[in-house]
Length: 218
Image (tube, rainbow, N blue to C red; front, top):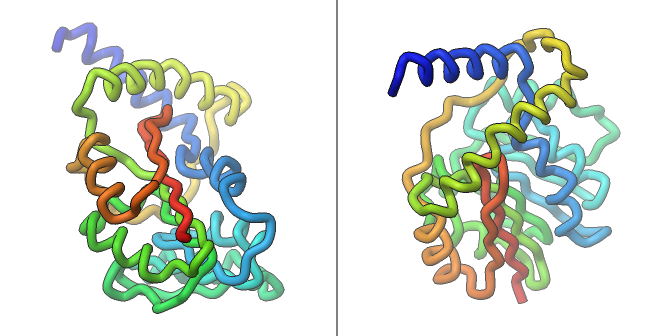
């Protein structure tokens, strides 16, 4: 890497540190469009501070959010009004997931932290007949298509940061994010394994370093 390249990367890091935006929340509206207008029970795996769980409460009669981090789960409870039908629990996925069945299961930017096949099997086994599983995941870049989408995401990421922060540096929030680790599976590996566990699953690469998976249980 040349000195110029290093300076550019440092400048981009400073830019995004001053103008953060939530790449996962960006997919919430898309995620809701994959779900039925009304559902009975929903499970959000890796619920974090509960943003998606509260949105799911507009579709489901009851929502259960689980996360392995006690502090962030407590924050989710604090931020959720008592009138909203959402409950939270501290649990390790996939072994600690509640039994279900659930009409909707969601998992955003979490499954790469879990044993992938076992997690999909746990989601499948807890999904009610006719239910919908939606995953927004992160994969390791390994193909020309991955690198092309990654390159296209860089300028778009800058545009989104400017738009969402109205071209001004954002105030720095108190961080409540869980520890993260890089993904170890490429997208083709994810597709191959997912379609073995979830026949007919629809997977697609997305901008902003994400992929999506949608599966309907018959």
